[in-house]
Image (cartoon, rainbow, N blue to C red; front, side):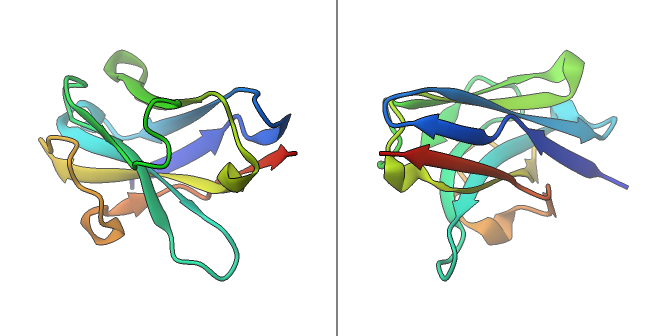
Length: 126
């Protein structure tokens, strides 16, 4: 069974940085696109970033473009989200998810992702 475990969340001041990690227990990890989403209470889960199976292609929500960077190390079965210049509106629970096989990192809909982690809380204080 595929399991995803996020880590690295916490409390940070506005303007600060955090790096989220997502460890995936899946021997076929390197064959799948990966994504990060976030959710706040009362709102739908929203797309943050995605990366292709090879790591060559990435995409971002407009709200985080230029501030967040998604990356992956296939040898470690891990995907990362480096977050910089954080704003209070970035406060949310962040989830990583496994996307399509040999996906190109363009999927922004949560329905395109089959497995999800439990989430990690990121809180940005003003």
